[in-house]
Length: 462
Image 1 (tube, one colour):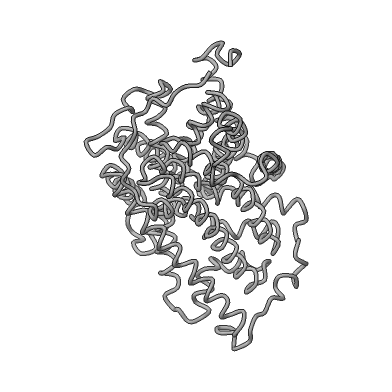
Image 2 (cartoon, rainbow, N blue to C red; image 1 turned 60 degrees about the vertical axis):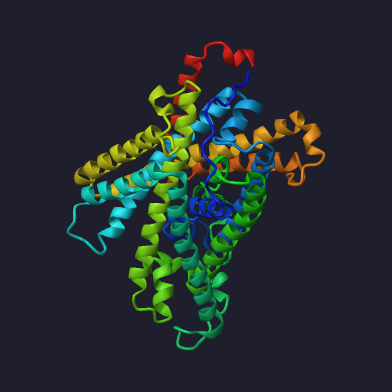
């Protein structure tokens, strides 16, 4: 049994450039600026290979998605494909996992953004700062898809420019010794402090859970495909360019960090981005990077509201979420779904503020809550890989002339799927991420039970 997408089509007002920046913005976030220290701690300089390895999985997932989008672009995209080509339960889980993931991510990003704003305004209440941030993002999303895309375009542009500057300045330090007494640092830090693979196989796979979390969000390209002009051209261009750019930015930035600084001293340096800018004489480095990570946090929350509101809108039209979320405003955006997601983020933010009053180690709680979104965030990747297998079988006539097919099908699907499962297993083995993966699994189990209760007998009929 498969369900037709009952949701009306939204207006195609985005440009291909905005679509690319949304995908970049979704995948280049606080995970790179703030999470890189954790990944380096677990595996040392070999974190470079870990980013490349997960990048290969990401490439396979996005090529599989791009192949399906080329023939059938639409809002909801990967969830539609999961429903049609795997099972309605797979589509249901993909949609609710996306909603849960981005409410949690949105909440975490707002919490982070309030901390960054306190750098300049330390005396303003975190609660008021959070309210202002959520209201700003809510209004931007309610205005129109075009307004959201314009805002996200500039958020992503700021991050991209910063990373490029970081890479360029880093190579100046490595080759010319600027900021290092005129002595080029060279490449010895890649192996001089315990070797290249300092954490062994276990540490290597531990780092991948955070890296997967950092890359999650690139599938926003699929959701935005329903609101982009000339979708087929935009999809091919975006998938090719976004994957290349993300790998360059992530691998390039991490390469500079582990080459300039001994990996085992990074935790005592603070932000390696701030340190690198300060090293070459940019004295306002802390303010610059604080502004950049602020925009990264706002971008993450902004992308989350956009993505999950479209999923909630579709769930409502499929009868799997309350009917008020079906509503479309005069500006052709799912306004009540946007307000629902923003409300969820606000409630989560308030609960976090209250918890921080009773528990001064709330930063640990923050990490657990944020990480609990990683496993649900992997569900779209799993369903894309599964759906593409059956998509090929159902569209043999169209595949003969398809210009954008996934290479080495079906072996690439099986490889990527197996590697994602291995990463989940190592998340459970790692004591730092065990609670997070259990929370994520419980969310998926509850969603599955709710679905089975609501659709008694349908699972057996499929």
